[in-house]
Length: 168
Length: 197
Image 1 (cartoon, chains in turn purple, yellow):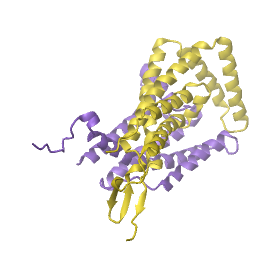
Image 2 (image 1 turned 90 degrees about the horizontal axis):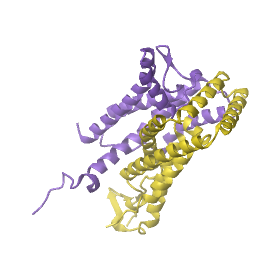
Image 3 (image 1 turned 45 degrees about the horizontal axis):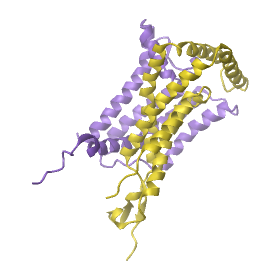
Image 4 (image 1 turned 135 degrees about the vertical axis):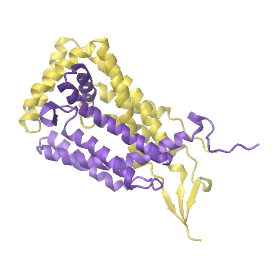
């Protein structure tokens, strides 16, 4: 495996860890580990409203994030794994910007609901979250892999690049 | 050899915006939409650096073009992906500290009367949303409980420290994502078709 694949794999593992923590919160709570689960709920409360009516439940307790966020992070993980499998590491350019239009349904669903024009449902939140989370890795992951490769080869952090041959 | 402009201004401004949005009560509700405020701070930081980059780079120069087949890519127009990563990470760290400080100061500074006023204002806002059908009515009670817990918790040193540690994990990650998205959207290098001879 080349360096780019290794970096991509590491990213997938980190995203999987993030999703794992979301699932761990209700599992820990139902197992009686209140302090650990409370810490996880408080951590994710910074990025999600965690409303009970808008969250999935596992083992009798709600997940650490809502329906929409669960869909986003789940589809982000799935798309990152898919990207690892189907894209050649040499063709690492992000998709065309037009694909970012897939974020618009989620933005509209949230905005129109808050303004009272439309009542968003669990299905609409799930579907729009899946679309948004599914498209982001195709932009973020190639750019992030590029960035890490550039930093690995830069003098700023790691001194002389190892691939540079020293001449007398 | 072309020297990149300094990232300081972009990082500081991006961090200030991130911290201000995330620290102010009411305004930080934006972050409930998948950390939109933090993502915005990261993207803003990249955009500001891009503007500086374009202002300081020399005019069109043959030496700053790379030919791939019959297409030239103009190297002067966009910072690298690593710039976006560093901008987002550092702006996120600044934003995390600033948000924690603002949040703590606001909560400690406002007395019980002002807290009650703020709580009532927020609850009225959510009640109006629930009347319009865009917010579940059962959730208003949950919001009341969450607000009261957050006001209670933030006063202890342990809670402030926990908040800072959580912010130092979340903000750099999402700010970095914002920066990378900004690079993917704004920072594409322009391709120039070959001029026929």
